[in-house]
Image 1 (cartoon, rainbow, N blue to C red):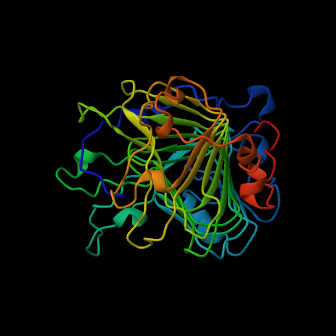
Image 2 (tube, rainbow, N blue to C red):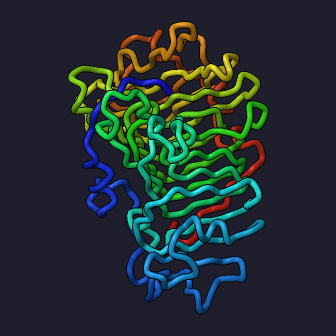
Length: 375
């Protein structure tokens, strides 16, 4: 999504990858609950969970040393990847044929397992041309039924890496498959961190994020999927290159007009390291590839910190598609960023409307797998 080029530090990502990030309620399981060795209570290559389990270890103690090598080896459906602690600097693609795949961070602490790369939309490909927003993704998941637990997905591109280049979109993960679920994961980046999307305009991919942490600045949760976020923490970053507001936007849905459900954030919280009021909650994205998009977002029962501009929490991406014409609404939010000071700028659901703004309604009969013990 379009944005001017700006410079910002790599501090948040590097500190987080080193385990020095802010506490986001994602503590590891008690040490007494873990098994010895690099794969915690999930066994080892010697005593594997089942024949469709592969172990990834950067020090060659597993079946593969990279995540992509394990994904490539997992031909067909129903594979599990147990990933040992480490920083995996690579791009990873899970194709449509690899349905029902599960990734497990072996230590049960997402800070320990980091899949990261630094491509951006404006980065030049080795064969020529640039990656574009979609091509910049560190991890791309197109398969249905994908699940990840205790994994960090990151893109540590800096705006200063491409001075003067407007292609600063840098995706940590692009998720397109239906029935995709993420439990206790982290998503780190700056612009366009989490791309919750679908394979086509007619495919209404359902995605679920529980107890996750997402950070960024410009439109850092975006796309056309039907995505439910529960008990998630969204963190807006400081933009030292900008002296005034807005620094960015948390959500930028691009829901297809025929899709009744877009993004739902329930019992979440939004915090910020930027000055008070420097962030908008959302703006609608109507891409040139789908000018009939009708962006949809409901934020309910959530705590919005002072970083959100309470007076005008929404803005336009393009004047031709004003946010007032989109499907934006809130319900029973609290915190300084949720104060209703200008009612016409804070559309609210009625209690009757709120009855259908639920995980069950949005996910349409799909019940995400319950978390494992300790998840």
